[in-house]
Image: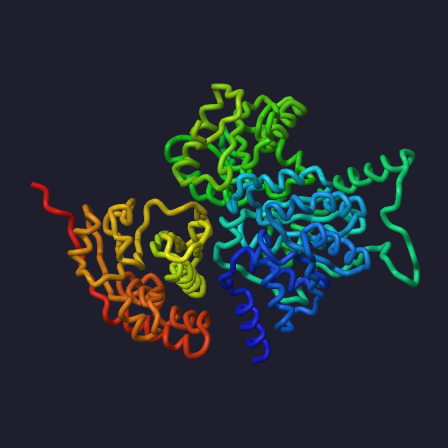
Length: 403
Length: 192
């Protein structure tokens, strides 16, 4: 009888419930028993922190919620909390991430093991409340580990994986879990959540090892003269390299324990494909649903979904590119004045050259400020990718813009 | 197998909430579902679109719905040809209106076969809730016309969403709409 009851409980627990990505992330924070959350609680903040505040008020999460006066302070407080040994979290979007920019580098420079969720959104001016990837692309060289997730479930799971990676003493870097603002942040969908004991068994709290403690005073982030600064920054380069293996291991172990794993990149319909489309977050989810139609039309186009962006899973991506004639890279941010105006396209261009791959690259900028993209638009991109096998397209295509 | 539902309402009528309740019901019944609004800077009274996709698999696009199986109209003033744009042959059109299904078909210029369901959701909302918020009443009409999700699952979610007395009033709105919805299958106009 007892066993039967336990089994029922297990099944009950595994039943998905309807949550938005924002809510799913708040649930992850609760299930991770995070100690400190700092947030600037007005626009462009997300409902992530509102939901966390509810959990704290209802006694479901015992944590300190620090209301600060700006995102700069939000991240500063989160970093400081982590340096005292607490498990700390914050969430942001758009202008909020921009205002944090200075502290982004301090978080990684101090090797702070924090996790931050980012509902990716366009940047002012002009004012846009809508989705694109301009905010995170501006943060890509700040020494953070960056994940792009494609569902609310993956957001929940990746925040949990994030702490396991960040707090690993071989890594000690901050982690950003990024997802499409509005298109995912406010979408309700099924999510399985796990119980706190299982989550903490997978991601036990491993506090910052050189913590601030009045009993044992230390100085962190002090002046580094030209004789040492470079080495300290180089340590981040090495930690990023190690983070790649740790991220792989974290995903595999997650899969063993919870039955869900994602890979660092995902190659979908790549078997027999002659072209690939590189996409992240909601666009990757849409392409999975749309690409079968492309194959029906004879376009053998696969999807390379970028899940881990920093560190860049170079080997996996080179493997995927080795089997195709063309790759179309979708950027949802603009690198103004760059050779390709898509930041990801520039990285893929470098990768193709570095590994001597005979792959034609197409750079496409799309969805800026959430410019409408329907299923047929993704089919058109599949066609573009396919055509590029034989026809070079040297200039970035600004898909859907009125010129 | 996937069913796409497009919701047309005005800010304040609760189209987004309705789209979420239907998705939540489908999820609780073991299917995969997404509900998402077409995002504008939300203003009371402005036209709002929302979407619900229900599927057997998680392979579901996260794009605005252009070819719905079902169109739900919460505000009769939004009944135009544009409302049924892309509605699939044999699909369903659910409308809060005092018009008959045949009259609705004329107003929107229905040129394909569709099940048209009408309910006076304003009257039901006024009598049950005392305010013209029609989203729960229209749920009753949708379920009656399409059986897309279970009535009992939906009522459970309505009770969770609206606590206490308000919950019961909304349950009453769903039930009354379910009972008083009028449905007709409209065939395309005969071609000579």
